[in-house]
Image (cartoon, rainbow, N blue to C red; front, side, top):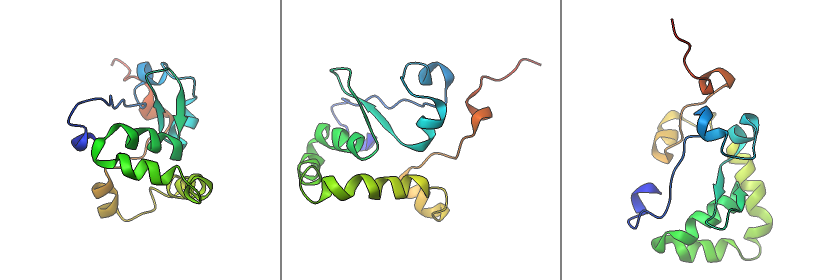
Length: 116
């Protein structure tokens, strides 16, 4: 999506970095389960609804956001998103690279490096 954000309206943040994760109202466990989006009004949207917010900002995909907000997608969308979010590291690595999914992180990778 970042490549399609020609007006640079989106700010992609890496929640694996502790200082960025601390800016959210979510735990590291919650951040690892789904994507979260904060809109300019300060509201947070997670998972499927976060994607809807992103699609609304990208002119090329605004139409898709409008469709996904409608019935039956608003009923099925969250469950479908949750299925893929839970299983995203089980998908073939090639598909993960195409989708731009970051490498899996555990509790220790989000901690700052310890000085030697």
